[in-house]
Image 1 (cartoon, helix red, strand yellow):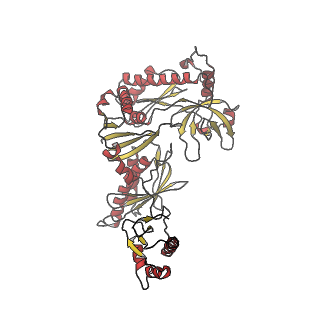
Image 2: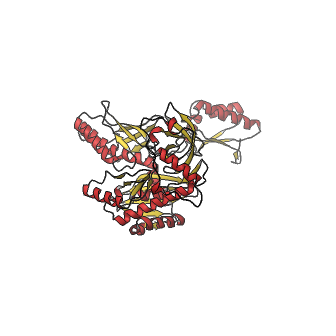
Image 3: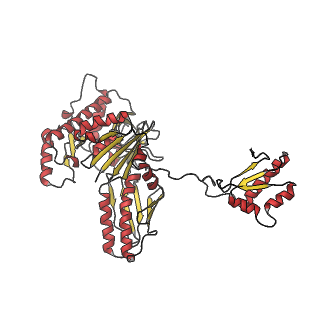
Length: 515
């Protein structure tokens, strides 16, 4: 699989498109003034404790207080509270020796948030989900700092290896390497990308993250809540950090500054990949040059067409997303069951892509075409799982219910990507309705009467051909009735460029009369 990252910089935002074999699979937008992104660290102030929800509302500087549930507190929250207080009050010349920091006892899973956060203290929190609709950010105290090969989790000493690394020998090797240089009070999660990497590469990544933690400690000195302590890397860097692999063969940028920043970042994390970066400067819009614009317009509507002639209909409600699979004009040469299976498998691949592309989260219900054979239903569920396997968001695919519905849950960390691919209808102005012919006729007659009262002579009305036919046909025609009523000749002519309800008046010199 060939992967390409196309980066389109605009004055107020940066749009990032990820292509897999030329097909758009992810689209991200990073605003110039972006705040409260997933992974950002904030010093928050506990504003309100809600015992009934076992949760708290935290002021992090957003217009709405952020939400922190007990389950997101982290077992080490007492240590975080202690560290936060020490770091804020720390003198400029002093530094906390974190490796010798005394870890407090863990909280119990069934505890009460009012007991843990009594006194409404300041607390170091991390954005778990961005603000969505009318909701503020969702927070977590399970702090983590992601790197290229490892993720460090302060306040514990647990070393875990990604389950996607299947070789037991490799898992043992990686765990042994990490334990050899891991500092006390830093837990480590070894990422899939670490497979086969040397001890030097892993140590360099680890030390970089430890330095980031030291910078967080420095930023806490004298800090007053609410304030941002540390920002997650920009979207471009985070995508490269998480996804950069041998499959990547091109990164194209249309902005010199971002080009230079990305070049420096690549030199840091993957020097061997520096030559895949290029600057787009041929004059054409970068998204047009790489077919992104066309794919966006085809992929973000309510209806998504599939190559076979089948299509998807995507609907959003407050509670869930609904996707309906329709066979359309797909060939029915096979038997009905086989045809349904083929259509459903094709739809499943596109649905997995749509979930990533639009970043749809929450509950998704898919109404596939009915199939009778249990083995076909099982095959569809298995294939759906494979299509979803490359999705970075946490998800679960449930078996097809007796009503033929598949339920999917997908982690939602930011607002769903929504791009309007429709244009407002010039005839109805987006209402879906236009004036009836009788109402339109009355409106023309009213304006005609006004112009004649203003002493205009030899008037010409220009209208759409359909309206022209309505006004000039019949015995007597409407044109003839107007001639008799106003005692002067009224000319009507057609214009194929007009909207159905559009009309204009012209005087004897064929100059338009503005009303």
